[in-house]
Length: 201
Ligand code: HEC
Image (cartoon, rainbow, N blue to C red):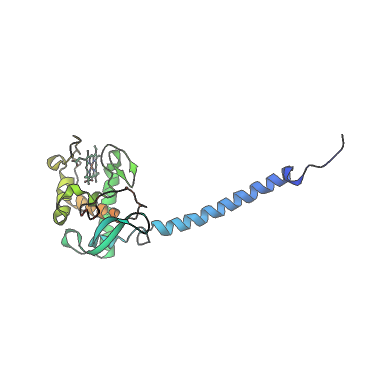
């Protein structure tokens, strides 16, 4: 047998080195992507609005230039008629989010697509045409959350949301949380969602 050394690419040494470089490279890429994502998902960033967005009108329309549905933030429209500063708005939205977690709404609903499929996705619930009257929507939502069976809508599905013992303050928080969430740029999710204002054909 003659002793021809294997080509460089076929040596164990070469593949060990390659594995180390690929692992180190991927690790660096992950760190970079993590920081890139953090800036995108932080409230007040390019995709997730600041909490005080609940002081404004929100809609969701098809954008010709990006070929997808995007939130449209408009003029003044304070929630429950009361403009809030950034901290007050953040506290109210936080109360709503904590209540949604405490009452485990994702047992039936999805939020941003995550959760269960028994009841409607809540990402754009604020803009749901089912509220019918945009001017009175927050009060209708408040009444619904505090007493879902007494204000059942169910849209022919026959499914009913149970009484969850939500207080007035918690319900106001949830309305703020849902309004804020509807202003998040979700890359066009849910697709072709027609809003209460229904400006699209
Ligand atoms: C046991 C299942 C269940 C749980 C838990 C539940 N829901 Fe519901 N929810 C429903 C059903 C069913 C409907 C649709 C029936 C209706 O609108 O009357 C609904 C409707 C809604 C709507 C109206 C949706 C729209 O698009 O207009 C909102 C808002 C809502 N729920 C919020 C919540 C919140 C917030 C929680 C947690 C605090 C919660 N739900 C927990 C079953 C549930």
